[in-house]
Image 1 (tube, rainbow, N blue to C red):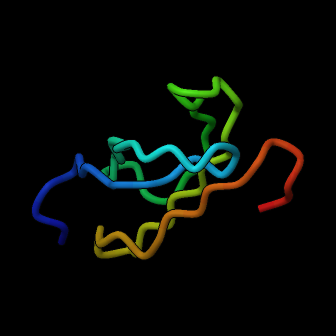
Image 2 (tube, rainbow, N blue to C red):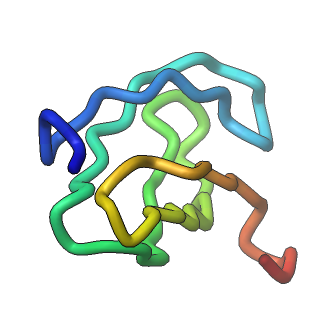
Length: 68
């Protein structure tokens, strides 16, 4: 089981490449959401993949017109 249900995750905006940190809630399992870039305000698709044991498998970021 994952030690912390909330995890900080460093990422880069797929539009402007600005670095920022996301807070991921691993307690809910895998999920998809949207996050606006704090620099360029573009909508970012976020897909969080969590294993059945609660460990983070991966985070995918994409532009709003990409299919993830």
